Length: 111
Length: 140
Image (cartoon, rainbow over all chains, first blue to last red; front, side, top):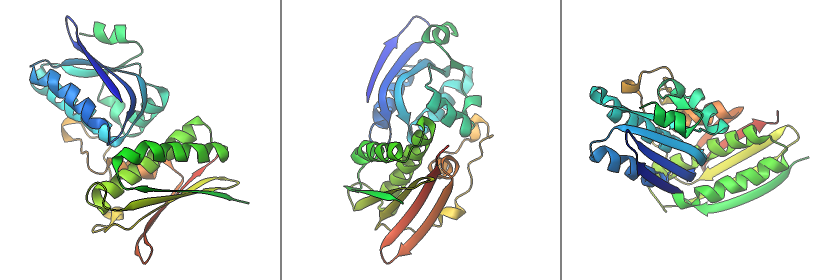
């Protein structure tokens, strides 16, 4: 699994490709942590290239959202979520916790 | 008539992708569509992760044997391990899918997906052969 991060003018962009399971989730966790540790809490997570995300990965999204939304300093939004993953998010009631955008451009424009 | 495929791997998270690939091939053989395949792959992945983390208490402490039975109605996956189950999975509090963000629990999410992504789930724990988890996913 590969993760790329870019700092944009109004937010940070995280792009992941591949499987997010318990063997790879640390890479995602570290990417989010590096942004939060720098005091930035407005994050777009582009999931277009994600082929699978387990509950471990979903847990990282929840934890990151909790941190970002604390004290209203920002939020984590999702972009280009593959259909199967959106169904899993929906099943677990997680689509209510994240803004989800069809395109990265719209997600970045949210901030 | 059923056909059977079997895979045995060391109980390590690095093998989760291999397990997913194995399940995917069996699902194709069983005639499951994309969504059903994703569902049984996810349920199996969550189950195997739980085995590694909870039944074995960590990486590389045993093996996981997966047997896929391609049946007329769908795919049965039997997952066998020799770990110690010190809790009753039927007693894990159910995930509250309507909980607000601040109250969201991570614990139990794996079990939630296992129960909600496949058609039948059966646990046979602490048998002489080990712990068995039997999943069945019906064709659409």
